[in-house]
Every structure is written in C-alpha cells, then in structure tokens.
Image 1 (cartoon, helix red, strand yellow):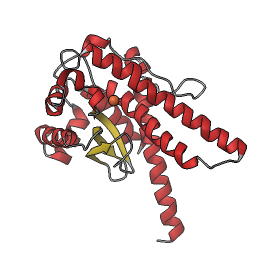
Image 2 (cartoon, helix red, strand yellow):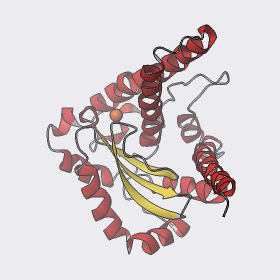
Image 3 (tube, helix red, strand yellow):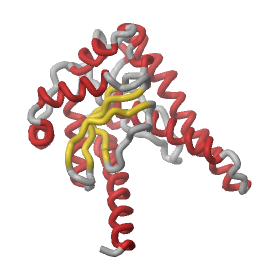
Image 4 (tube, protein in one colour):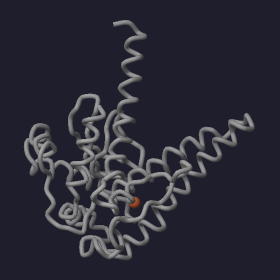
Length: 247
Ligand SMILES: [Fe+2]
C-alpha cells in the first residue's frame, strides 16, 4: 500500500469517527417521540455557539441515586463553565487568526480541548441517566455486549472497576470504536486525556468529585454502584445504532 493511500485511509477513518459521534447526537436530538431528550442532546445553537442544554428531567428526579443539590450545581455551574470555556477558547483562537498573533495558541488549544470535551461528556452524562430504574440493553446493543464482553455482568464488572479506578478526576466510558467496530471500556482523565481515536462514547459516568461528593463524600465506589441502576440503556442503544450506521 502506498503512503498516500495509507494517509487517505487514516484520514477518512478519523473523519468517519467524527461523523459517527455527530450522528449519535443528531439521533437523539431528532428523537421525535421524546422532546426532552432531543433538547437535552443539542450542543450548539443555530449560530453555532455552544449552549447549555436543559436537563431531560427535573433536578430532583434522579434522587435517591443523585441528590437535587448535586444535580443543580453540577448542571448549572460546572457544566455551564465548560460551555462558557469552550466558547471563550473559540473566540480567542478566532482573534489570534484575525490578528495573526499565535503567541497563546498552545494555551487556547488546551482550553478548547478541556472545555469542549467537558461540554460533550456532560451532555452525554445527563442523557446517560434516567429517573426510571432497571433499564437494560436490548437488541443489537445487547448482542454486541455479549460478543465483546462475554455478557452484561462482565461488562458491568469491567466498567465499574475502570470507572472507580480513574485517577483523580475523570470518566468511565462505554464506547463503540468505529475503526474496529467493537465496544470498548475507556477511562478518561480530566475530560480529554486517554481518549482513543475512533471511539464514540455511548454511555458515560462522571467521577469528578463534583458529581458525587455532597452525598457520597469520598465513597466513589458507592456512587458508581448506585448510578448503575439509573443508566439509560435506551439512549445508549440509540447512540450505538447511529454510530454503527455512520461508520
Ligand atoms: Fe462533571
């Protein structure tokens, strides 16, 4: 294979991964039978500015798994800060281009990666959770879990351990890798470190302390165990379907 052919294939694969991630948001944003889920999945407004999407449920609806005060602070303050941070980074990079002054390009590129990834992951987090209890993977997603992890119990053990073991602040993620067409469990540090090219997140668990400390204090494992019962496998299934179609 020639070098240009290899470069082309790599570029198209990564474009496909980005397209697949976009399609998972579009799939939920256009969910005609669930207006709240659709609104909660919109990352940007009509002008392309990042915006804080509304929650698809009331602040108190995740209780007793996650308390109202935590959800309120987490969404209104922490998530909003990532939205604002991502917009600021884009603005500063546009100003740098306009002025031809890239002295701070490293700083604003890092800010964009951190805040932009924070916005994406938090939007996924709110739609990875549901006030309903006992949701389970169904159909193609269920079959893919059996194929790639053995069964749901093994995925649960893997994802739980990986999430609890994230160093400092970060995320446990169930993803579908569009390059090798397999499900995978990821640990993400901060919002952007240890990410894998091609991995499209289907379901995410936030283990920054702001996600659980008011109620669970230092007991991260108790929070992750409780959250498992509030996961929304219907949303994860929609994302899986969209990512597979786009890949
Ligand atoms: Fe968070």
